[in-house]
Length: 365
Ligand SMILES: [Fe+2]
Image: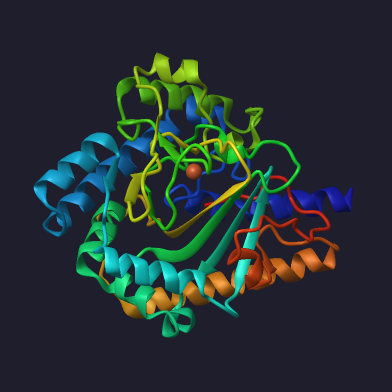
């Protein structure tokens, strides 16, 4: 009885935090009983968050409109993505590509999702000190300005070198191959591909215009929010909604398009729109400079460009990952994003992860 009361009090003590989370990017129906409340979502809580966040994002885009040409702004706002081939001059691209492939002794973290390995190196000051070509790219105004505008945020995203190894492990299909929206608000991811991308290595796939909040999309979101934490797909119940082909048609959206593009193509997408990692026809890999950015979706202003904030973000990420390592170690497991030898990333051989076990629902942001 006393134990029951203690548990009840502990649950009640968390409610102020759940309330605060309504005004943040928190998205999980399952982990927050307010966001997942059927009654509140029937009354329109989820839809209200979507509409408010979209309004705020529009204002932030407007504040940053000087960073992008009118044509690119129109394209991004209309389609939900930008695709720029031959982004870097060929000699700069070749130098960047060579520098990345020759990296040694950097901290590589790996996530296993189904049959796919995602490997990443965080581009922090320590790595950039020995990677002048990467640094040059990140400092390039044509790159930075595009990143900031599409992030609707006046500071740099988090950058990684990323390698996607498809069909690398004998396991179920990669859950990232299912069309989904990352979250309920505008959010940016980008890829500067260092490899040619085609059906062999799983092209990024996007539903053009699916980032827009149409009435049909809002109705679909409303329905999903009522299902909330009871949705059978665990990613959906955690706020990263999966969508079926027939649901796309019902929302009047076009068929997904795959970006089969040559190396040196920059793709930037609003991953509130529906997207997926395309299927790879063979054991293959795809190396890229990858970025993602999220901000408080309810912030009306894009903020300031503060270097210290980027450094702080890198420190927070590092501390978080190390804490996850320790927690997993205590349970005799590997963390979702666990350390691997750098040679496992910077070779073209797909490797078998030396894993014991790991959570099946590891999220690839
Ligand atoms: Fe995604």
